[in-house]
Length: 146
Image 1 (cartoon, rainbow, N blue to C red):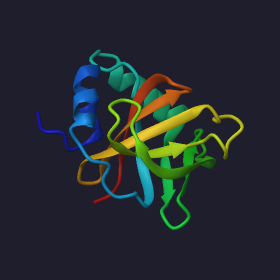
Image 2: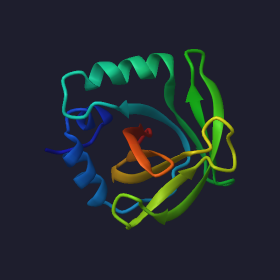
Image 3: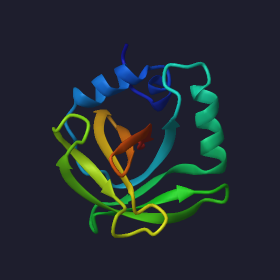
Image 4: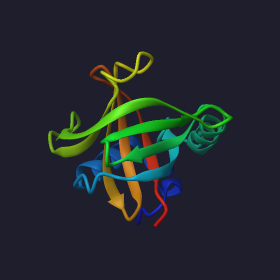
């Protein structure tokens, strides 16, 4: 299956998402605004509906500033840009290979235990993993305009 959009990712199982993530390099540090898609129930028929609900009510994406190596999450129905993270490159907790890490530990009281990892998997499309401390929670997609 060719993966070019976040909708394509919603059709994959967890094992397929993990293999896709592991098969790619980090890519460049992104810059600008990306539409976010939460991938909460991979491999189920409910995945797309859950992603839509999260996008509508909680999280719409991320806004990257590569000059300052920070980002803000685009959250809540009215589009607040908050919950700041620092951007860096480190080994992935999934496979030990390089990835782009979005680190909230020093920048956010509400998300200080969260670590996101992303890799570029198609032009303008990053696949991400979310960890709470060392526990993996969900996956997500970031779609940048190309």
